[in-house]
Amino acid sequence: MIERSRTYLVKEMFGPTLQGEGAHSGRACVFMRFAACNLDCTGCDTDFSPEGAVRMSADEVVARLRALDTSKTQRVIVTGGEPTLQWDAAISAAIRGAGFRVHMESNGTRVPAGPVDWLTVSPKPQHHPAGLLLADKVTADEVKVVVDGTVDEAKLDQYAARWRCEHYFVQPWMDATYQQNLARTLELVQARPRWRLSLQLHKIVNVP
Image (cartoon, rainbow, N blue to C red):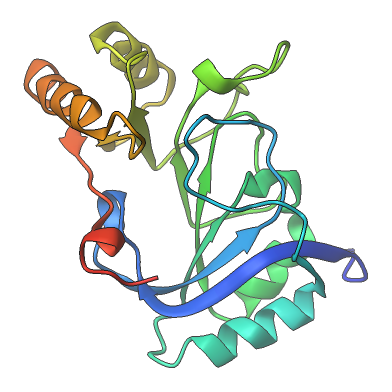
């Protein structure tokens, strides 16, 4: 029996908008961002802090997604923070049962505790606290590596061996060293042609 009584700490929900990254870049969708993360990435462009977040039940989440999805995309991007810290069978059943396809982005440190329809793994082990490892038995639909000075060809090879999937992306980290990161990303695309360039399209066209 699925427990539907718990609540979830949600930082924000918005839409209609576009998925700006990866294999589904340019697709219409709505977004749901969980609060909290188990990493502390330098230069992170996302506010996932618990301050200002709202406790919501699964049914309240579904109601809000339906209200936001005015284009009837029935596609929700679930992100964070790290969404697997809160994702479970109950909220999965509620959202998917309402007809939404769930596309989740995770840092790969935890196996999602409830089903999703598309899982993007974006590993950032250079920002792991001591003792935190990438999880075993995570099945990715795509791998998206955000490129900073620590990412090289050998690292991409390790990721491709760990997660066997169709879609591999490299994306420059948008921090103070963006131009260097972009140049490195373009070099990696040439050195490892199975990896494709991903840019943050939503920032380029100025949508949420």
